[in-house]
Length: 239
Image 1 (tube, rainbow, N blue to C red):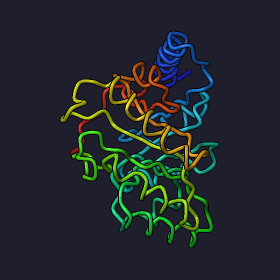
Image 2: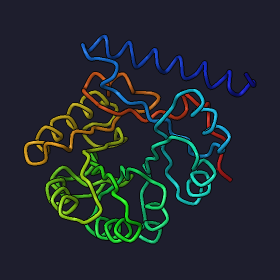
Image 3: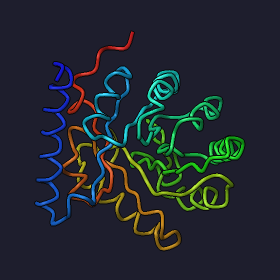
């Protein structure tokens, strides 16, 4: 193996061990948790290596980086997740390659995604991004809608042609009542997921946890964890 492939394989093995241990500790089966590798700022060559190592879910947060990378890796059996704040002028491009948009947080974005998905003749999975640093019906510092806005957005996604409501996503907040309380934040997200599934039983995806706090997310019940640094290394500075 190349040096980079050896490095990524070792990092993946460590992350896999962490997820497995967290599942055992919380009485869950390993297959209940899907690893999404966040490949932002890293080249398509790394994505190709990850695919060779068995990774099937990758995530990006900037369309200008993701679109050419996804095109270069179009031959690979990958599921692409878009996890960044998404402007409506980027929607058409994102819908061209993303299988899931995890950052749905406002009605205008739902409308744009639906229009683009119908035009592309694709079904797009959507997660509502929940901001746990926001007021009940407010918006978070890093995007997302307050818990009070989930029901409205869920209804809009469900009724929108070309879209599929898959569940909820959050990022551990840096401010507010859940700052430095990742476990409590993720448990709150699980409660909100339970509420959502009463009206939308199929929306059972819960995306939470990253390199530093994946154990807390698994303990809370997350179905997907988004890991970048622990697999790919410390990111280069963006110029």
